[in-house]
Amino acid sequence: MERSHITDDDQGKPVVDSHGEQIGMVTEVRSGTAYVDADPGLADTIRSKLGWGDADQDDYPLEENRIHTITDDEIRLKDEM
Image (tube, rainbow, N blue to C red):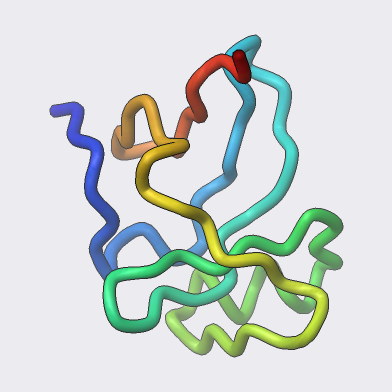
């Protein structure tokens, strides 16, 4: 099932561009905003998948208007125009 709004279940998902290239991972979802780490290490990946997310100064908020679709496996961004 596809959707375009962020939920807590999206923590730990990869974020991919419109061509399917992974550009980061959701490290935390806070107040409906996903925070993306563009270079997650193994520890960040494991913490996020366990629901122990913690966005830091290197993580970027993902604006919902940039999201094309969210699936069970990934968050895909829209083409940049």
